[in-house]
Structures are given as C-alpha cells and as structure tokens.
Image (cartoon, rainbow, N blue to C red; front, side, top):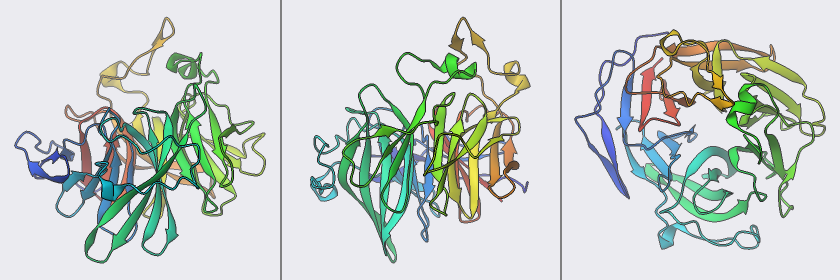
Length: 354
C-alpha cells in the first residue's frame, strides 16, 4: 500500500453551507480527515464528478455532499421548497415529505435514470423507517442538486440497514435484526435478518425466501442485473444470490480477518469495508457475554477488501492500524485516486491516497 497523506486541512459542517476549517482535526500517522460529518456510515462516489455523497447515521445528520478537491462539504438535504417534488403516483404509500430535522441516514444506493440524473435511495430511521428516494442532477462545472421524490415505508417492525437497486427499478433492502433477535444472536451465527424486495409496480416490500442470514448488512447488485451480493455480518462473509431464485445462495465468500459492513462498486472494484476481526489491541475477537455483543468501542484496525466475482474471493485492497481519532469503518469509495473511508461511529471521514 502506498504512503498515506501527511496532512490535510480539516472541516466542520455548517448547515446549508460549505464547512469551515477547524484546528482540531489534524492528520495522524496513517489517515487524514474531513471532520464534522456525524457518523458517515455509507459513502458513494458520484460518477464523472469530483463529488462524494455521505450518509449521517444520527438524528438530523442526513446527507452530506463532499467536494473531494477542496475537502469541504455541505449538509445537502435541508427540506427547502426547491428540494421537494413529491411524486405521489410513483410513491402512493409515502405519507409525505421527509423532515430534514429528523433525517437519520444509513445505507445508500445510486443508479442512472437518464443523462445527468441519478436516482439516490437512502435508508432512513428519522421519523419513519423507510427508503427515501431522491433525484440527483449533475451539470458541467456546477455542484449537483438534490430533489426529494418520495419514500417507500418498510414493513412494520422491519428496520432497513442497506439498500440496492436494479436498473428496472426493483429495490432491495436488508434487515440486520428482525423483531425478537439481537446483535448477539447473529454474532453467534443465528439467523436474524433477510433481504426485502419491492418491484417497480409493487406497493410494498416482500421477504425474499432463502435470504435470511446472520446479520444481513451491506447489499449490492451485479452489473449483469441477474445477481446480487449480501454481507452476512455474523459470518464475516458475502453471499451471492440469483435474483430469479433466491432459495439457495450461489456462493458464500468468506472475508480474510475482517468484518465487512457495506459493499459497493467503486472505481471498477467491488469493495467491502470493515473493522479487523482479530484485533490484539481489543483483546482479539469480538465477544458475546450473556447474549450481549461487545459494542466495539475499542478502536480496531480497519480493512478494505476487493471482491473478485469471477474468482469468488476477497483480497486485501487496503488496511490500517487502530487510530485514536477513527473507528467503526463501514464504507469505502474511490475518488480522484484516493480511498475515502466512512464510519458508523466517528464524526469524520478518513482519506488516504493509492
């Protein structure tokens, strides 16, 4: 792995404006940071631009739009009138516009609709358990714009973790722990979650048979539009499914010594990101005591894996040691020759070059 950045000016979010510099966010021995991002659990690179989209896994944290050249970002969805265009015909079961003050964003998914416009789907926990739909428009030399279009409520009691979408508009959402199950259960290898599907003409989600796994986490579709990948967090593995018959997975691909969280295509790679599995600084493996899983507040090393679909194996793409300012790696995106890292725990995005 090539050398890390030596330093980077830090930033702090200012609602609706570019972030201001902060002296409290210096680079460490391995990583540089963009601070104030409020638990950027998932990251996506906006194709053919210099912009990165980050979720915010906390009440009101919403979405961030990051300029990867200036290392500054803005709180993207504010709920202003010009950002709302409710398509009630396409989303008839959506109760109404999303409250930006409650917006708690987790998993992300992006697909092209037409030249210059992408459909962005976002897992939301703020005010309702839902998949929120936005249109992202890009223009030459201008920052991308965001337009809220509607939502897809999750079934009662089901809390989505990650989301993916096929080109025909079919939406897939993972549930990590269904009612009555816990994190401790999936850490012990017990089935806790599943993949829920909503077709373009459906008016609700349905559980795909055979997709119930120990801790269904990250999800991504294959470019062939026939298969999809699901992270089983409790197994530290990726399961490959045929969308036409999900009764049995096509393959199980184990991750090498890390706990993969999100999975996305980025820069021609299918990358998975997560914390080190066996971390000496934290006493080794994550433990379950009296049915309760260690919350992993101890700072673990991090790993980004590169999944080769043809060979059905995961190789190490990048890794790092425990750092005092960054923990809970959950997502990775390639942008401008650099690797950007998201976290479900930290208040910052990490950056390193390749």
